[in-house]
Image (cartoon, rainbow, N blue to C red; front, side, top):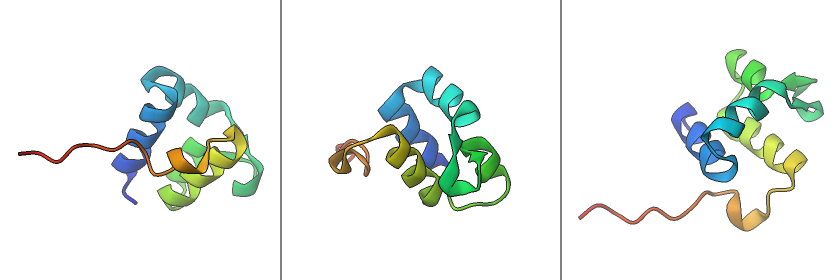
Length: 73
């Protein structure tokens, strides 16, 4: 997963404004007590960070892959 995919998923699930607050303020125990922003800046895989956020925020499994985006024609 690319970093841009991480932010797209965060924005889709939590909204563009709240996703930034959540990433900066929510401490994730499974990531060593780091926030998502700290974990990403230290080189952790965006997918691992996304799944940690999903676990803490109880994002249902069916929404963890993001919304369906229709293909371009």
